[in-house]
Image (cartoon, rainbow, N blue to C red; front, side, top):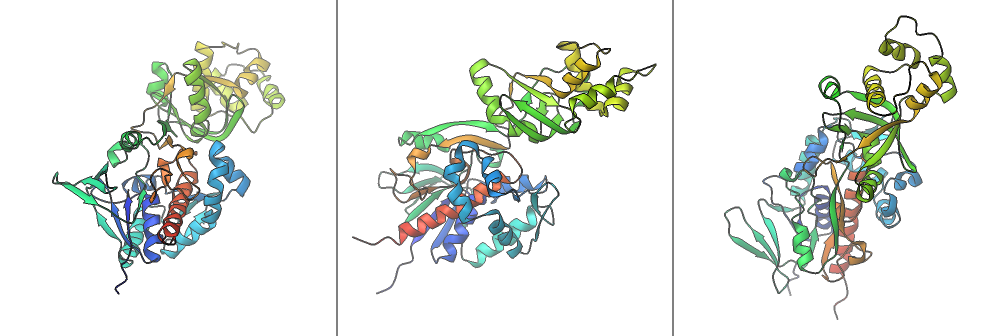
Length: 412
């Protein structure tokens, strides 16, 4: 009797979907990847514009703390496919990785396109098929997947197992627009609302701030929001602030906005100088120096940091320039009043997604046996720095293992 090869459908050609496709094809299944876009990995390529930060060299406890409330349930999946495993995988595709001084891990090319090309060649060798411009529309009554093809025709597919890896809702023009939430809700699957994560915040700057300092970086700062803090860099934009320290505090900022309608963060503009030393430096006579020159020489502030300080002094606390103690306190704890968060159209990632209660430990939907989920469709978030891609890859591997176990379950 001829042995029938079982089939797997992967919906979504991002990192989670492609990683699952690789693992399933290696296990001997017939795998087809469906995606609404013309080419796979569109958002993966966008991530590569900044150097393709794959993962991070943090110690495990510190690494997992980046996932906050999701750290406990994500840990088994990241332990199974760890940052070291991800680096080995990258190296195996001929794109050797390296860790920078900050602990961030990149391919040596600093690009996503060579890695993606090598990856697609491997998938082709493994026999993975791709169906581009297939927009998933949901399920038929018999469980078949329904797609709308580019020519408008309906396509029905009934695989032995399915992986949903459609991403979140950020950068929707690249394919992931969160429209899957409607399909799942119609099928009584609980989905937490999708919100912008790793997104800029909105600040009402003066015209001078917008014109002269949009695009300037505030380096080596500490940002505080409530009981949380983050170190890194902030970028001034015409509409507010972006950058790693802002992204890291995103969940805290969102919570404040949800409860109070606005949020307040504080910046330490000289995190390397204790308050008493900064006060001592500012106690020296200013003489005929302008305030900006004095702050640059005495406090070591860059022009953009001085502009932030003067912006707050003009609109907020109005600390006198002749009081070094109050000046130093303000430089170490500068308030920034946030009016909102930028929209999903330019957010790096998405918070929210399919609730953990809807899944078993193998990332299978409890009410949809044989349907698994990976990546940003799951309800988790993380700051930039390699944590986003690591969890996408790791949950893709975990879902593929769950699918394999499902397909190999004993027949009764």
